[in-house]
Length: 468
Image 1 (cartoon, rainbow, N blue to C red):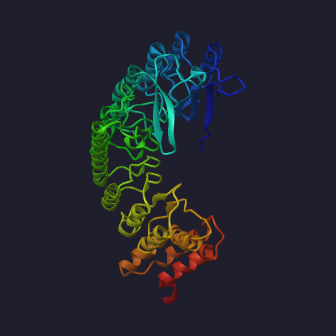
Image 2 (cartoon, rainbow, N blue to C red):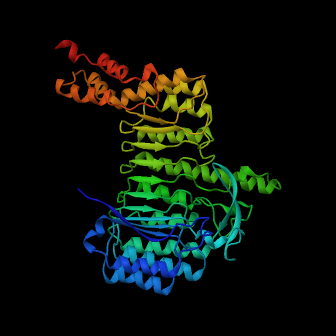
Image 3 (cartoon, rainbow, N blue to C red):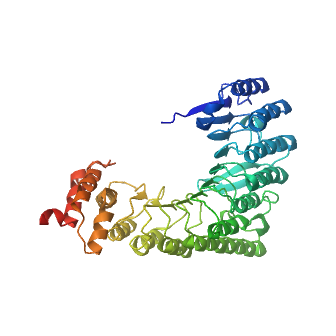
C-alpha cells in the first residue's frame, strides 16, 4: 500500500506576512533539503511551490533536482507563484516548465494562480506591464489585472513545446492562470497527440477574450479560437483525454453593457452569433467523442441562455456513448430549458451517463421539477442531478426525485436491463444489489428516501425472489 507525502517549497501568502513573497533564502534552503531526501520516495511525493518568485540561483537549484538528478514526483504544483510579472519572471517560469516536461518529471502538473499575490499590493496596476479590464463571470462583473499578451504567449509556448516532447504527463491543471483565448487554443492543440494525458483543467481562465485588445468594445475583443480548438480535440482519434474542465470562464459579455451606437450593436450581435456557432460546433464534436468520461461546463454565464443551445446539449447527450458525468449547471438555463432537458433528454440520454448536473444556484420551479421527475421514471442510470433547491414548497416533489436517484444508485439499472431482456436477475446477484441499496447514504430523512423504501422498490421490479 502506497503512502503519499508532500514537500512544500515557500509559504502561503497571508495577512500576517502582508502577502509577501517567499524569500529567496527560504526557497533555496527548502530546495537544498529536498536534494538530500531519498530519491526512492519520489514517486509518492507531491512537490508544491507556494508564493514563489524566481532568481538565477533558484533556477539553478531546480535544474540540479530535475535535470542533473532526474528526480520525478507524483505531482508538481505551483500555487500563487510569480508567472506573469515581467519578462524576466516570464522566461524563468517558462524555463522551469521546460525542465519539468522535457525530463518527464511528473505525471501531474498543476499551475493555480497566474501571478504572485504580493505583487499588486492592492493598487490594481501590477508592475505596469498589465492592463486592467472589466470582465464578467457567472457571479457578476469585476476588475481583473491582465498580464501582457507577450507574457501569456511565453508561458503558452513553453507548455506547447514541452508537451510535444513529454510522455509522462497524465493530468494538467491550469486553473486561474490568466490564459487568454489564443493561449488556450494553442495548449488544446498541443495535447491532441499526447500519448498519456487523460485530464485537463482549464477552469477560471479567459476563453473568448483576447488580452491584447480586451479593452476594446468592438467584436474584435472576442475570439472563438479556443472553442474551435475544443472541437478539434474532441474529434481527434488520437487524443486520450477522459476529463475536461472548462468551468467558470471569465468572459466579456456584450449583453452586459449597452452599445454606444447601432454599429457597435451589430458588432455585438455578430460576436454573440459567432460564439453560439462555435459552442454548437464543439458540442457536435462531443456527440461522437468516444474517450471523454467527464466534462464540466458549469458557471459559464449565458452559454445556455438560448433554447437552441440547450437543444444542442441534449442532442449531444443522446448520442454520446462514453460520457459518465456532465455538468451544465449555472449556465443561464431558463425553466423552459430545464423542462426541455427533463422531457427530451433525461428519458433517452446515453446509457453510460450517471451524473447530469442541471441544478445549481438557480431556483427551479415546480414545472421544471415535475419534468425532471417524469423524465427520471424512464431513466435507470442517472444518479445525480445536482443540488435540488429545497424551499418548503416543492419538497415533496424533490423527495420523489431523490428517491428515484437513490433507486438508480441501488441498482435499478441492472433490474431494468433484465426486465427489458425478459430475463430474470440471477439469484447470486441479488445479495450484492440489495446490500448496495441498503448501504446508501441519504441527504434527507424523508420516508420516501429511506433505504428500506429503495430496497422495496427494487424488489417490486424483480420477480426472481417470488418465483423461487
